[in-house]
Amino acid sequence: MTGTPSIPPAAQPDGADPATSWAAMSPPVPPQPPVQRLSRRKAWLTHGVTAFVALIFGAAIGGNGESSSATDSARPAPAVTKTAGAAAPKPAVTVTKAAKETVTAKPKPTKKPGPPDTIEGDGQYLVGEDIQAGTYKTAGPENDNFGLGCYWARTKNASGEMGAIIANDNITGQSRVTVNKGEYFEAKGCLKWERVG
Image 1 (tube, rainbow, N blue to C red):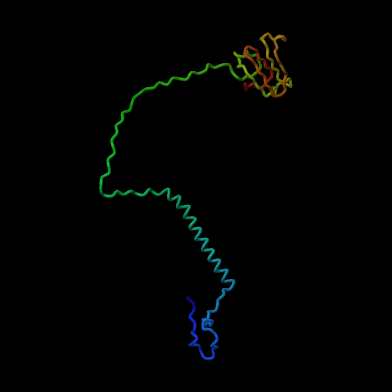
Image 2 (tube, helix red, strand yellow):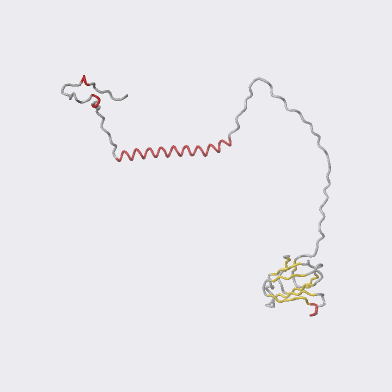
C-alpha cells in the first residue's frame, strides 16, 4: 500500500494519546506559496496579445496554403536519377511507310430549289409553283394601308370570279391560312406571310 508515511505508535511524541492509532494521524502539510492574481487589466492585455499572435500566425499559415498551391504547379518536376548497374534497354525502332491514297469526295446531292416559303407584297400566287404548300402566318395589315385591313383569298383558279373563291377574309390582326398544291393564293395590303407548317 502506498501513501504518506506516518509515525509509528512507539515513536509518538510525549503527550500524544496512546489510544489514537498511528495510521489515523496525518503528516504535516508543507506551507503553500501565496496565489498571485493578475489584475483585470493585465489579464485582458495578456489574452489580447495571445489572440493577436494567434490571428497573425493563422493568417500566415492560411496565406502560405493558397500561394503554395499556385507555386507548386509552376515548379518543375523532380529529376529522376539512374543508379549505376544494368543499362536500360534501347527502344525498338519502328519504320512506317505513309500510304499515298487520293480520295475524291463526292458532293452530297442537293435538293432542287423549290418555290419560296415566304410571300411579300400583293399578288396572286400558284401554290406549288410560286409558293410552297402549307400553313402561312402574317402579323396583319401593313401600316400604310389606310385602315383597309389585310385581304387574303384561296381560289380554284386565277379567273378572279366569285365562284372560284374557296375561302377569303379581311383581317386586322395576326392570321394563319393553309393552302394546298394547285390552288391560288391572293394577298392584298398584308405584311409578309411566312410558312410555319
